[in-house]
Length: 211
Ligand code: SIN
Ligand code: MN
Image 1 (cartoon, rainbow, N blue to C red):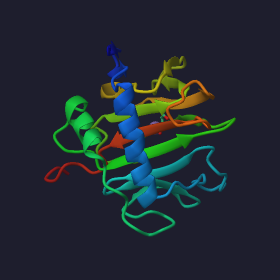
Image 2 (image 1 turned 60 degrees about the vertical axis):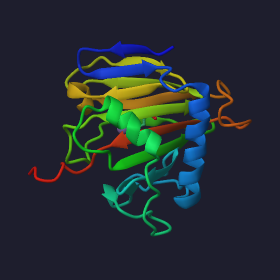
Image 3 (image 1 turned 90 degrees about the vertical axis):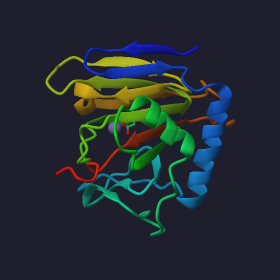
Image 4 (image 1 turned 90 degrees about the horizontal axis):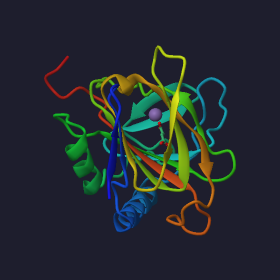
């Protein structure tokens, strides 16, 4: 049964939003995306240090990071092909939770596997549509998700499990957030080797007509 946690800053956590069967279907859709737009290891701007997670994207725009910086691109950085489409089930998730008048343009797929796979505290701020929420799905191994509001010193953390959905809306849209750690082998959704997949839906451009 789904349990919803709502914070006053717009953060929402839908625990158990996707059933085990729906999680399997999402994994199959991620495999489909990856067969078209393969996972690759991005590097940090300037330093060129490799990320500890593998990434790919679906949708008209994909988020990329390389030596030149962070940005959205219409094509996969290695293959040069347009990204795979966003699966319909994820478009429906956005319709149901985002309360935004336009569809997401990017589904970033993060793949955490192995010791040390994590995501440092960061803000999602490469989008023009900062008024749209970020909607994110957890699949596979459990993780510690940390959130710190822009002007606050203290942070909060939650355990995210397979099938949970996080929405960063309102003030929390600009919050620093990241993944401290993964709990290896806490789920068998991704098979023997385990791991965690995070799907992050974002609107990038302002809906047409707005400036
Ligand atoms: C991200 O902020 O890009 C990833 C968050 C997560 O893995 O849950
Ligand atoms: Mn993020």
